[in-house]
View 1 (cartoon, chains in turn yellow, orange):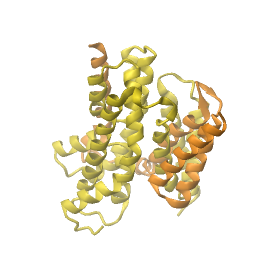
View 2 (cartoon, chains in turn green, orange):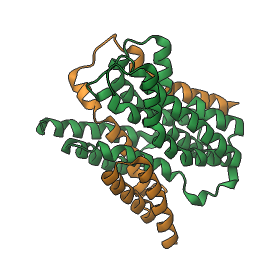
View 3 (spheres, rainbow over the protein chains, first blue to last red):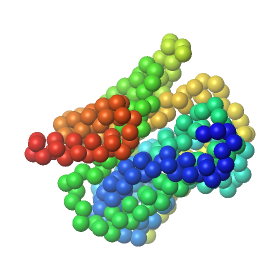
Length: 232
Length: 103
């Protein structure tokens, strides 16, 4: 996309970029709704949660924790742990959004997800910056938001009409695989993946999803270490 | 009621995490090492979610053959095609096939 792309062109490009990821979120949203109802979360709250938290893995984890009768503060702590990666997305995007007003920043922060970040990543890494590229992020964020809300509502409504045996939650895992694999360019990326993966599995017994934080941190350090040895 | 409070708190925490650096943007500049580290965020953070899904079953390190097989196959599809939807479709089809075969 050229640097002078219009707001509308950026917005549409964001929608297009997030479309396959949004489609992949549909089965994940459906199974979230089914599990939320099964966990005893009232239908209204289960639907509201998709807008309140707007984070697939966190919502999925909440249904598991609520079903297990986990106390509220521990649920919140686990949500913080699993969503902490968004602070790093926030940091990566911050310089490019520094010129925006508070309302824009709040809206884009609310809409920041793995999917919208992945969809707009190339637009923000590229050399052809463009003054309206935050509209790309808005398009990706809003597109995903709409599809996600509808999927979660459908899941809550259909409820037991969707058999858990279909393992639809696996679509979430597959979406992340589809995002990560194309990002494995240099040896440093492979190092980051391997160390993060091994750490996450080895530390999985840690409480409150702390393994996720430990693994992401270890993976990033491994990537940095290899990056230094591997000048490009 | 307390469930609503829990969810609202979870939402507030999530928003605070997401707005953190975007909200402060322009008021400080990140050191170069920090910016370099950010390149590895999606790979490291998402892998931290994916591997346990493939290799951990009911809290123990015990790969479920169907999920692990489908995940590896999906990774190969992603590597060769870079197509997100095809990756998810092949992964789900493989999962159902493996679950049916291994039943």
